[in-house]
Image 1: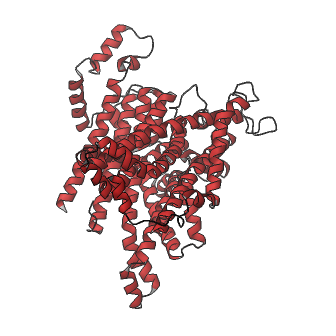
Image 2: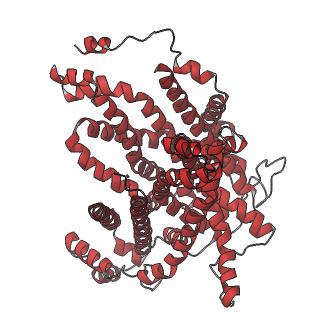
Image 3: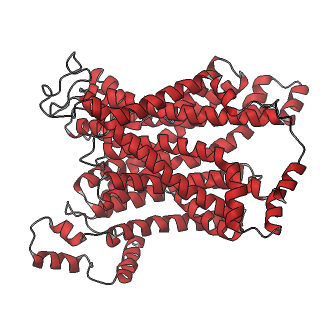
Length: 317
Length: 292
């Protein structure tokens, strides 16, 4: 067990290191001089030279890399090219909201997916089962912004039920403030749940169909235990584990989905920051946003891995 | 030698096993998928010949669907219908080239790791790391650094999608590598290249077909996502770009036609491609089960 966790931690560290290195190399090895980019068009040679030395771009690549890694370890992502602020402070402002958004979507997907997949497995080829199968296949064809804009037009623009463009009402306090946070969270979370719940419930259903035919379930039936108890207590425990591992793999897609959803709803998290950085070609912000998203995904994945292992010691990989 | 060993396997009744084509034509969903895919390919090839290029004098600004502009117009007065028709070609191009790149790289890595256990460790780590990084944010960083154009889009999608193909092909190839006829070929002294191409590749062809369709459908969605985020080719029409224009000019919430029509085009296309892939692998699985 300890060895397993150690290996997983090492792998997570290696993956985050790879993400960091990719972002470093992307900017440095590409044609075009970052200093000219920061200075903007028509800047004087002296200004560019000045910027180059202040950003350390005139030093050897390896020195820059070591400095970059050292900076990251101290939480220093450099300065934004566009705004005169530290990148790290932007990330710290935005990341909690994205974690709230994706975390809520993750939990809600599981909460909706479990009964859906289980009921479909119990009544195989029934109405719900067929519907779930079609929806699961169609889910891979759903475009996140399409779903998000549909919800935006119907529930925010037409019905006016939900506010968009912010994470909270700064004038509210106490319960009203919590309500304002929840209100702005509903549509982005709903978008991500709609996209993710189909494949999740479908996988759970397949596992449950298998588990319900296994001997311990038959033995439980033979002992006369109530069917409801068998399904929800005995079978679900075993059926859920592979689905948890699958959800871990889905985390990367969830992070990508958050970029698109936050852009549509102008929800100021890391995803919306990413989009803004793309539009303004603000590379340090873009890199830091990617590292933050990648690190979150890798760490959450580590967590689901270790959890599956704790819940089911048989898992070997 | 290899022939002798293959024919030493228990003979199968040749008549009793219907081909995969017979299995497919009996499936209505396969036909739905096939019709959608053919429609998309035709639109991608013929669209720009049949429909006028989008121009800013095609109608009033931001007009809803009407007789003259069936899909409405955008914030610059360009016909959304023209943009959807022209955008199909971009999607088609990205889908075909990116899925070919991903499949070639993925199949090569998958086959090599199945055949050479030593390479398997190295490739395994690379595939693991690639699959652990969030794909869309990774593509955004790379595409933004390389500069937004069609070549970047295709390369970025192709080079991010291959690890999944590699994993699929590797597991398929591993089953074949342990078969006696592969050992036989090794003993006779066949070169690795010959064994892989002659003995292993033919058996993973169905997996390769599934992979191409899977990646093609994902590539169409990803191209739309990158264009929607402003990383598309500024000189190429694209379904994601129509929605990006709506987003950038702040009309997403009322100019529903600028979202609805490209979204429908995307949905029908990707649904068609995934249905075709899904039905193909379903039909193949059923056929494999019948064999036993």
